[in-house]
Length: 229
Image (cartoon, rainbow, N blue to C red; front, side, top):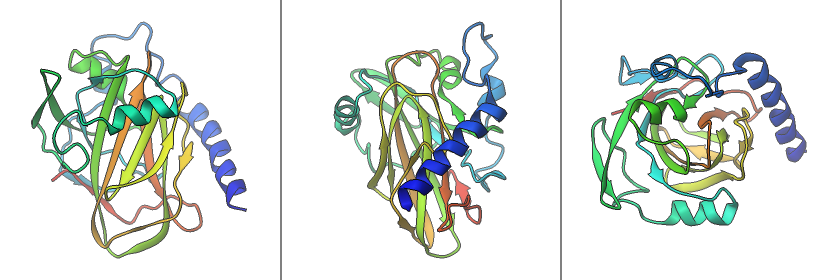
């Protein structure tokens, strides 16, 4: 029964993403200022998820050079320590880390879309989105303990995700972003602060991701707030 529910969500995601967001990840012929349409400077350090439950407020680290989108390659990439505190840090806007002698900066980002477009994020900071590993971190604050929920993600290309320092889902291969493409097993969000962390590995071309929480019935969870501080 659970497998059928997951497949149902994935099928809905294909239709949803295609009908509402066709062309968002098309990058040929893009202008230098296109990133301003998809990657916004946060106007507040906290906000609610959007009407479909998508988390739009994130800390993003400028991309790290990486290759390989298979499960083994991606797991090896994300399990390599690229910088201290890789699996524990909740950064602030402007924080810096050094990876292989290169200084990279964390940036706070927002969007009015369902997804975070990493291609335009990289472009905005004069970095390549191809052959790249992106780290994304956000904090959600829950009014009470929420048991039996799931993290649902989509990414272009592969990605691995953690909730409160526990790895909960990974999707692999050269794939397009599909809403609810990967759905975790049931988990419990704590009352108060919960940290969601993602590592997205892109081979070439377009790069983006989306994430939301599904409740016990598989509906988007929206009664929490997203925080950057």
